Length: 306
Length: 306
Image (tube, each protein chain N blue to C red):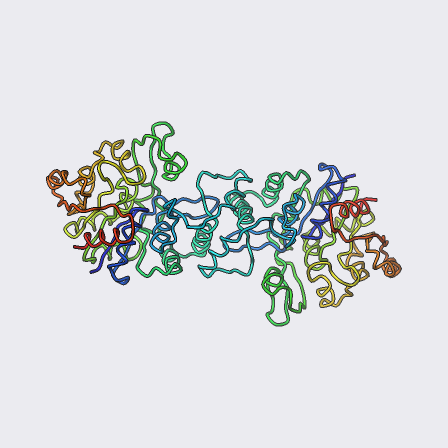
């Protein structure tokens, strides 16, 4: 079965870890958010793409959930000496990836081309596509600082600040990367990963053509709720939904996605929400959704495809 | 006494380590070679400037003689995964310096400005100037590979290849960095450090105006011979002089510098060469010139200024 997975970072990476166990590489395409991308110290950093690569290739730091196992931080400390920005931690191994990406982009390669090269270098053989080769930046408006970049909000402020709105700067001028719309149009199943709807999935949908393509495939599209028992497993999805005037529940997620998703997979703990979700016109599937290990991930992936 | 030191890398850095002990910071200016500079992985690397900063601030690796003490190599290994060039070793700490330099140059700072910032960050308070803010590249023509860059010759080929000629690509279009000519014009003493005449000092002299400024100050200019007993202490200076048809002795050095240098400081082992040097119109001063430690360096610096 050909499968397209619409991805943010950590939650998506964990689901992909399951997908690769049950979908042949040639039939699996991940379409990832690049709204979180940032240029720091002159380096082009694509956190969601890297989280996917590092996680699916089992190189991610289990403790941190991002970055690489066995990482050191010497370049970062050296940059501190020069007074450069140091709120965004870059490990030394990880910098190798950013140097390669930056260098190749400087040579004129597209982000999709470089991403393919990086994935191959980590022995990943499914297709990993940034949703666009162009520049889109997730910007959040905060109560106290006005509009700041996503990483500024997420890392520097540790998402500990109220958000009044989110926008995807530059999205209108972006084109989907080659293969993105074709994959959405032709995949037998489309899965929206358990990522943050407001700041991980929405910037993918904001790229012209992507939302419409998904709307056309609504019947074959399933999402996994990133909200479990009213909480995000990781990150600020629950707070963000509330701050943006939504309900921080699987029902809120169903409403958010109702236009593009025919089915929402929710956790057993939220079984009682199924009727409210179906009332939104979204089919609810109740299963365990917490992915503690590869077996959990494969089981959830299997549900996504059933 | 105001002092200008014309510098290559390691030998110059060691002499400067002595100079700072006896010359007030405000009276000391180092003018350094940038012909060895290279862009790798998108990073602007200035080996001689960094060797000077790391050595004078006592942070250099004593074992290697270049790069930093306590260095790790994780970014480099990561780059290896992506198949990027790996013949030029970049330590993780060192990459911090290159990232800072590259980032600041990208913001429009000049190399001299960034160099000043880097030196300050290492608590160096004398003036360290790249000879130019523009791009000059030392190119060597080899018997077997044609013309290659200096680092390609020096690092990738481990200078184990015959050189038929050297040129400084782009030098004609360079301007001396602000302060370079003024310093040469006004310094009470000018010292040409014990660096490689052909590939470390000559690219400094090749910047328009520098050679002429030095010629005008010949009487106040002393050089320290980098050739001791017919050998270079480090690097290929002896072989290079021979390959370029010169004599690999202190006399050969005197001939190389005769136009710009009134006095050549030679090692005691070469005392018998003094008459031949003076026959070239260059005064010879015979002292111990090998700098094993800071005290040796201070003693040699004192001779340079006497």
